[in-house]
Structure formats: structure tokens, C-alpha cells
Image 1 (cartoon, rainbow, N blue to C red):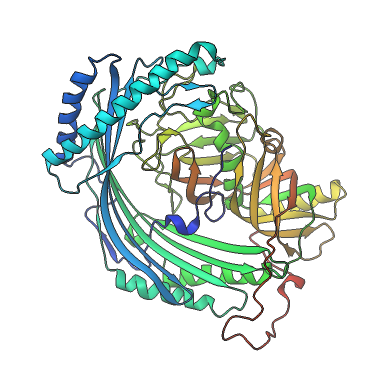
Image 2: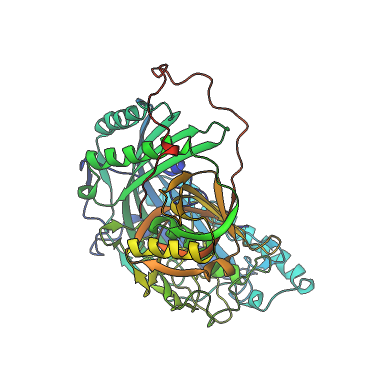
Length: 593
């Protein structure tokens, strides 16, 4: 099973667990412009890593079994985070560390120590270890030497087990593909990045932003987190690759919690992402987002539960972006096509239509922006030293290829730069910037009119407008149904007879991918971006998805599981007087479309 974690409109990581950073005023300063071109000198770290790599490979490459590939990565991380709750400061911190990961492959690229036998995946590297932040060559090389020795011994043990068991295990044709691809080496030395941040202004801001949420009795808890992250990556391998590149990201996250009368937990979330301090959101922009979250929460805690149904639905762009990430994106990751335990939904469908012919999908990790929006899934090189490149996955409905790491397929022998991981994990093929394009577009107003036409044609009372999605998960393993479940946060009923829209709650979108993807009948004309963190086998990685609003002729929803805990007996402090506000669930409501 693949399971994404969460972040705003998509099931992509716990909103508050990841916090990557932001600024309303440009309080952070960079050592240079974001993603400085490769005009810098190589760090002394690169020389230290290369020296130890040459020394180790000369010896370990002559052992039995021989190491045929080795690679070192050191990631230098500077992080600041300020978090507040309900008008008070929760935490404020800044730290810096370096993390070493060593890859040692023994045997040959056709069969090495990472080969999966049946349901058992052999380790392709350890979690790594910390190294000093000082550029002391002798100390750094000593840390690399010890980690290399550990990884070589583990690789030899794994290969011995694979060789002894492989002959008695059934395998698929794709499972017989080589374990590792040969790739051209890259040499690039970009500028190292860092930031300078005064945390005191942010401490005042998170207090102020969370204090405003206390004005609503329906908001039980609020957390606002600002974070700044500067990461420099240094990579060398025995193919000749030498890389040095850095990236800075800022994030501001707004998170509130409430509870319906039946005990159902309700959460609303919004995030701002940027890479240049001058692009930070202003106070007015944050206030507007906070007001929207509050209004939605006050409506959702009173909204009636939606019953299970199947019928037409309209997903706004952000919701559609998450839908494609979950339903299509994970099934287009290359490593799933060769794994006998995976459902391999699309493994044999290259060259076949899987979407309506007006839809195309590109994963382009080289895109820094879409319009004015920064894309969180941008990167220059992946975690296996391969340069990022645009990949057309679907062209006018026809599946063309997959997102590939250095774990090749029989028909796709090379990586296209999608080997990604969280620190401490082993890279596998992952999404970057998943961009959905359409040549059958209408305005959002026309799209809503088409929704009502579908409702009438199917003799339904209403269709659904899905305005925001918290996330979800999808089963990709062969042992489970090939199904997905996505959790909408803001849902409206749109009636065929012209009655005002009414807000609903407590539903999940469910279905199977091959059926769901073919039900899309039209799209809007304005793409919207979702930025988040996606959790899968190689940990949590930053991703983006972009799509226009989509109209589907058939979408199935089911009731969400409720909580047995009732709301608090007393209202929050300061809200003892009964509210005179009208029940927002009983009144007409607006929406994005």
C-alpha cells in the first residue's frame, strides 16, 4: 500500500510536522540569489568526499564480491522554526547539521544487493550518520570511512542471501530488469545558500495570527508555524559525478481544529510557500486566508452529514491537483511497475489511452514557478545525481512513460531524474511537479452550468462541488483492492433546481483509478497549484501538483468515520454568552466556483 500523509488540499504530510518556511516581510536574507548558477568554487567537502571515495573504491572494487558502484551524499541543513498556538508562543529555534549517506552496490548492475526477491526488499543503504559541520577534511573522511565499511559489509550479506534464494522465487518479466542503470556523470558547482533570520518579529506574528482565531467559539485549537530551510547538497560517485547545489524554502502554515456535534473532528489548513523573501505574503493576505478558514470552520461544524452517493461532481483546481497526485501520480512511479507485490495498474498500458484525449500530464521538476506561484517540487538534480528533466507521462490521453529513478525497466533503461528521498531513506521514483494540461477548457461559470446539466441528465437532485481536499491515500499493492480514498474538506451540494448551494461535511471520495480517470468530461481554463509534502517508501519529499478545475460525470462518496468524543461541555473561555449568529449551515453559502 502506498499511503500519502497530509498537507492542506491533499494527502501530502502532517501540516505541522514539516513546516518549511516563510516571511510576511523580507526578514530573511540570502547569501546569494535563490539557486545561484554554477559559478562558485567547490566546497572543501567535495574534495574530502572524492578523496575517500577514490581510496575506498580502489580496495572494495577488488574484493569478492566487488563493489561496482559507490556514491556519497552529504546534506547540510540550516533550519529555523517559530510556532504559536491560541495567541501564545509554542517554540522558537534554529539549528544546523550535516548528514552523510553512503551507497555501496556489490555484484553487477544486472543483479546486485538491492534486488527484490518476492516480497522482500533488500536494503540499498543505511539511514546514514551525522558528520561535523566544520570542513575538517580528516574528520569528515574518517566519518565517511566508517560508514562505507558498514555499508559494504551489509551489501555483501544482502547479495549472498539474494544469490541463494533467487533461483527458487518466481519473478515477473519486469522483475528481471537490471537493478541499476548506467547514467552519464554530471559536474556542477552551484553557490552555497544560507539565510539570516531575526526570529523575534516572527514570534510576535505567530502570537497575533493565532490570537485572532480565539474570536470564534467553534475553533478549539489553532497553530501557526513559520519556518525557513536552507539545504546544501554535495554528491560524488564512482561514475565521475560531482555536484554541489543549494536551495532555500520558506513556509507559513495556518492550522485550526474544531468538532461537530456528533464528535467528528474537523480541520482546516492553508499554507504559503516561497523561495525569495520579497515574495513573502503580506499581513493582509494572511488575514484574508485566516478569515476564510474561520468562516469555513464555523460552517462545517454545523453542516449536515452527506449521505453516500454516486453522481456528477466538480473539483476546483487545487482539489483536482490532489486528485491527480493520488489517483494517477503514484501509479506512474517507475519502481511500482517492476515490483511483483504491486498492482502494476499501468505497467502494460504504455501506448494505450488511460485518460480522455483532451488531457495531458507532464512531470517537470525543472519548473520553478507556474504563473506567479512557486513550485515546491522544483529541483536541479535528484538524490541519485541525475539531472531533472521534463517528462511527458500522458499525451492527449495516451500513457507514454513513467517517472524513473535509477531502477530501470526492461523498456525504459534510464532514469529521467525522479530518484528522490527524505534524509535517511533510500531513493525510489517519486513525483516532482505534476502538471495537468487540458485542451477542452471552459470558464468556471460554464463548468458549473455543465455540472447542473449532468445532474439533470442523470435525474439527480444535486451534484457536488469539492473546493478543498485534506489528502488521502491509495492502495497500490497487489494484495489490496486497487482503490483510492481522498478526504475533501469543503464540499457543497449544487442543486439542479437552482436552490442555493449548501455546505456538507464528513465524506470521502472513493473509487478505482482506471474507472475514475475516464469519467472526466471537461475542465476549467485556470490551473491552480497545490504545494505539499508526500510520504511514501522513501519518506517525505516536497512536491507540487497543478490542474484546472475538472468536471466528472461520476464520483462516489462515502461517509467519513466519526469520533466518539463529544465536543467540550463548556465553550472556550470568553465565549460563555450564547452566540446570536445564524446557523451558517442553514443559509446559502458561497464557494470557489
